[in-house]
Image 1 (tube, rainbow, N blue to C red):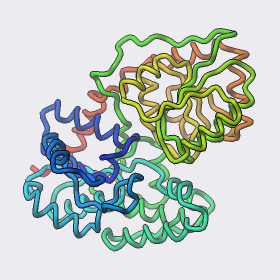
Image 2 (cartoon, rainbow, N blue to C red):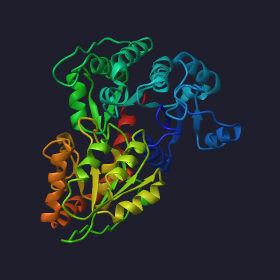
Image 3 (cartoon, rainbow, N blue to C red):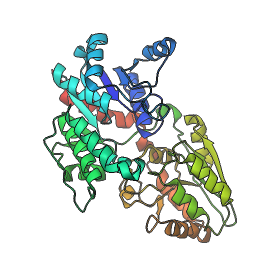
Length: 410
């Protein structure tokens, strides 16, 4: 097959979407498929562009100054579309357009699929309503959400309008973001999400098409066949690891508040970058917390750190669906601490600790139970290890190939 991936989240960024695309591209190519990636990017030299092109990765027309050093933004979809048709006429011979995310470059992927009559598969990765609500300053939330929704409607038909309610669209801003997500999803031929709970939410707000469930996968070449079971004994230091974005939506600061109330020895390694990194460092220093910040690190470095930890920290609430951090934990048998009941659907049974609610006080209470009953770590690790090879990308890619084959025209 010839597969074209379109994503606004790939080059110059880190995170779950990037990890997912990298793992899937490698696995598809290993199976003999041709995979191109089209993505936004910060300005690149001719030499950098050539190196990317050798890997079949291509930079679409992107804004040079807008959100510089934060996130690359594509130019208007019409500009990107014209550029692709001119510079990549071979796209008309591709079998599948595989789209991630819902911004400019991704919009073009869906539009071109219709124009060239090529089947489209859209991955709905997560809660853009919560992302916009948490990351945009208070006075601008509604304005930004309405602007994004109306701009999206200029390029993708909006046949469904989500109204404010008492469920997930509990503000005008969130209602507009749900409208954007639902109409984007409905424009694709086939949909994929990583989790059942997110699929239910999309269905609730008007997505009628069948949604395939396909979680992220772990690279086969990095996989440990016999990872060790974690153990924690009374009097030892509880070794915890954070390997997510250091940001408001991941809730690094509430978790640091919880650390102030721990009754035993602990150490937290934080891997990752994000808008709250400076605040987190200042808070940890001010309150003399036993935390080490490592910033962004290579996949290999983070995996080695995971293997030395006793507990992973994933305390987002009403935001994540099936983050790549969980895949990495499952692969090596690392128990996880969560706050969001939705995460119980995607973590192996009895392999996690869950806080009674998302407050720092309840998080501290739950963690303190480990110092009273340290044997919990070994039991959770054992549960995590039972089916740890199920996360291999070579296994999960088979479903993706099945989805592609099911919509390709003879």
